[in-house]
Every structure is written in structure tokens, then in C-alpha cells.
Length: 285
Image 1 (tube, rainbow, N blue to C red):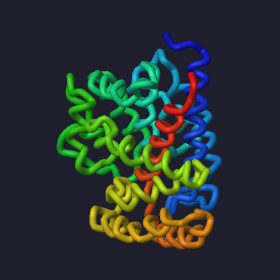
Image 2: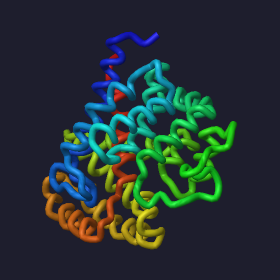
Image 3: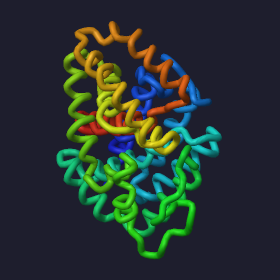
Image 4: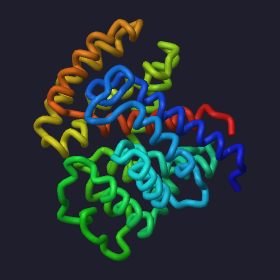
């Protein structure tokens, strides 16, 4: 049984993760350093305020949390600001409700237990949010009625090679735990700043994988080239003793990406989820 203080603690962790993510200097993405893509920092803050209580409602299933959060976001903001984050946050929070001491193993239980109702809710949420460059899929297309009995796990398995968020669902969030969470923990200690640690995490993801959001909009070749371009920048940034010294370099990369209209939104979503794991693991509920 989840008590009110635990729910409040989960909401604090969610809000902290949302706010730190949007404040962080993430080249190509929306931040307090540089807005863009017809979205503002205020849009993201308001989205966080609207969806945090929904995401932390223990009466809702994982799929229902995603769907109701998307509906609330579109109604309150008028655009899709947070779909990827919602898809990642909902199962993590359900896992945390089972006990933070074994968050990752609990997550495996949650993900393996997702059912056809979760799938239907998530597909409806994705369709409602209409993320840019979604296109169509031969199997389990969100633009079409989902076959009866198809689990969310099966649908995510079909998409895992082209979408990094789908990949997390079928690997028990491997990249979040083994890469993102570890990166934030290490750099938060080194630099005494979770916000700058989030930038290190974001750049790490951007340099490691072709960003799914960029891939959907511009194709794999463009996403791969941006990943290649990010590698030396991520390395140079993470080697800094003072992250503030890298602001000019990061802002130059931000300008280059925004001139192309390239938004590494999935890298930002993975960073936000890594922040949530970081906050859930260190909190006292």
C-alpha cells in the first residue's frame, strides 16, 4: 500500500527530473540556454506540473498513466512536449512503488506484466501525441487499430531496432541503468552539479546512438552523422574540470543543430529517465 508521503516523494522526484532536464544545456534541444522547435521552457515546466500527479497515481496502470498524461499535456499545452519521457517514467514509477531497494528488478516485473490494455493505452497515447516523423510500421502501426491480445512488450520488440525508447522496454531499461544513471551519478560527484551531470549524460547518449527522433524526421543517415559529430564534443565536454568552460562549444553545436531543425529529443528523454532513476534511488520515502 502506497502512503501519501510516498506519493509526494515520487512527485518530487518526477518534478526534479523534469526541471533539471529542461534547464540543462542540451545542444539541439529546448533548454533555458536556448529554446526552439516552437516550444519554450515554460511549456515543459507546465507539462511537468500537469503530468506529475498522473504519473504518480498508484490507482492507474502504466498504460493509463501514459495516456492520461498525454491527454492532459495536449489539453493544457496544445502540443506534444513530453511523450518520450512519459513512456519512460510510467514503468519506472510503478517499479518504485514496489520498493526502491530493487528498482531494476522490480522494473523487470512491471515490464513483463504489461498487458493488452497497456498496449492499447500506449498506442492511443502515441497516436494522440502525433510525434514528428512517426510514419508507418508494417506491424503494430499506432495509426491503426491494434490487434486484440497484442502485448505492449511484443509491439516494443518490433520497434526496438529503430526506436531507443522501445528498446528500453525490451531490455529492462539497460541503457538508462548501465549508462545514463551511472553517468549522472559519477559526474554529479565530480562536478558537484546534477544539472551539468545531466548534460554529460545527454551528450553521452547523443554520441552513442543515432537519435530516434532525428532518425524519424530526417532518416538514419542524418541521425548517424549527427551522432558522429557529437562524439568529439561529448569527449571534450566530459574531460573538462569545469563544465562551464564548455558553454561556448556546446552553444555552437546547439546553433548548428537548430539551424538544421534537428532536435535530439530521444536523447533528452533518455536523460530525463536517467535523472528520475537517480532521484528515486537517492530519495528517502
